[in-house]
Length: 76
Image (cartoon, rainbow, N blue to C red; front, side):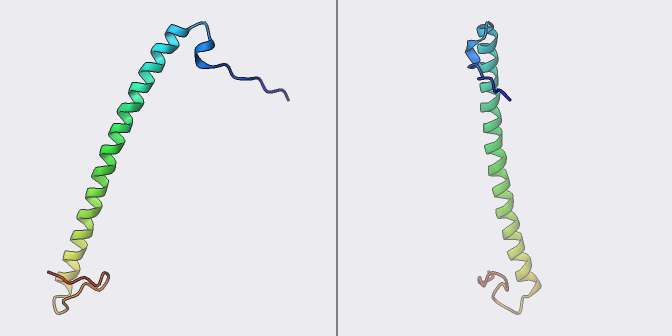
């Protein structure tokens, strides 16, 4: 089996078309990375909110105890 060496992107005859496509793909990649970062931040906020609600609920379920059973933190 013989492997052929891949040519660089700009080595083809369609350098203008490829350059335009490359610019478009880079812009799309940047947009998607930004969107991904926003979604990641939203997910962390949701996880923090859920943790807070779990703590509140555990304090409401066992009001006779001043400590949350899982975390050992004082309910307040």
